[in-house]
Image 1 (tube, rainbow, N blue to C red):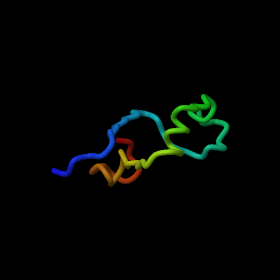
Image 2 (image 1 turned 135 degrees about the vertical axis):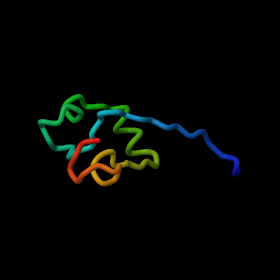
Image 3 (image 1 turned 180 degrees about the horizontal axis):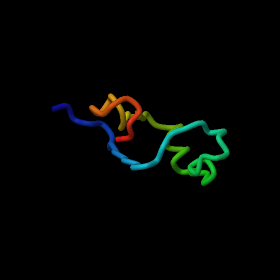
Length: 63
């Protein structure tokens, strides 16, 4: 296994949806999560799909 050169952090934000930052009805946007936004902008990240066909459920069904 390759040795990591820097620490790695896994953050799981259950129920924390990622949407349009200009959506005034989005509770996450309204909360102005400064630390989260800074980390998102500064470091590599990815997202995953947790509903529908991606997790073996019918299309459009929440997972």
